[in-house]
Length: 547
Image (tube, rainbow, N blue to C red):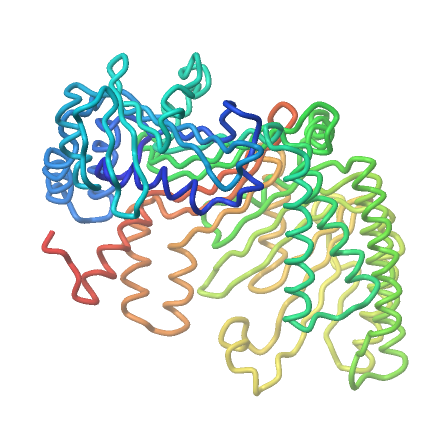
């Protein structure tokens, strides 16, 4: 668990900075109800994790020793075995005057005040200690029940929750630092202002980027705005947290969002509870460069939105499709494939949801891509693909072999597409030809391309019945990625980094999400072997810090 060391002064500055920088519309709420709760794990845990991260990054024990010696200098008087908690309030009729009240556990209140004196002039002749900060503001501090309670207003000292532990929950046990935002404590008028600001931002971004003003683009922007409006108005709480977990050899960044009952978020969460197990779990393999899996069900609201988008996409394709220098026969075949693809995608997403898996693998120093999709109405898609293959074979001399073998009950169609002589980088990856395999079986479509694609596809399909995966999961195995780039560029440093990652056995960077009651939880995770690259880069560029 826990975070790198920061002196107490920085912790308080962080609290003040969060209030100063946060959009007022996000933090405003009814009086004396904190809109945001921030919890910081005990200093003792933070220091342990700081030493762990220093060691994982390749700086050894000396880094941890330096951090602990600095802690002794700056954190005197703080109880290192209890969490630090902050509560952010903004009065509805005074959103420009946010109030922060915090609790720092202490063993020696006077020593803490001496440290806080570095922030400004201290007046401790009263029951409430006043610290005049360098920015012209005043901090008020008082000792209560083993804590230094501080606030930027005198009144704020009395705004602690009646049961702070209940408000904080187990945030400090799970994360080094975490924040919980209560969405329904934000007044409706301020939520409306936030939505209007987002819409203006969207419009300004589109204008500056020169994006097209097509009907499809308008529908896409409106769909995004509807989703953002739903999130702002229907969110019960959002939890954001960071943890360094030595037991899991990983750094984790979490976001959990819970909606009010009956919200779109809650409905989407409920729709996933009876979700069938993904058929594409075999695509999650540790020896790959990249793997992914997605398995989700659409709600009725989602279906209506996507139907509208597909309608616009068809119209735009008819108006703007430019195939360049191809014959009429080729253009007709390509258009039929695109139309069949759209028909299949719409029927799948609006009836069955999304279920797919994929990976990119390096074999014999060459990459191979493999993917599998759940698909509805595949007969039209298969027919159009066969027609395109025949046309390409006749007009372009592409090697095509239809109905060329099976994997289980899945019939395979194969092609070898020549790579032009001028495409040196593509040829270095795939050779003179790109081997392609397509397999269709009922409501399942498989695609593989690269080095021995049929062999990889068979392995993925065979393993799809055993692995447990998240509803959404993407994994990057950095050792394999860097090894491929080292082979391409013959770069010594990249090769060295790939070897270090392989030796660590902890090179994965992952993003996944899963459902919780009435909501969703997402995690970005970095295995700690990746941290070793920090010392490699530092040493290469002459910044080894002497460790």
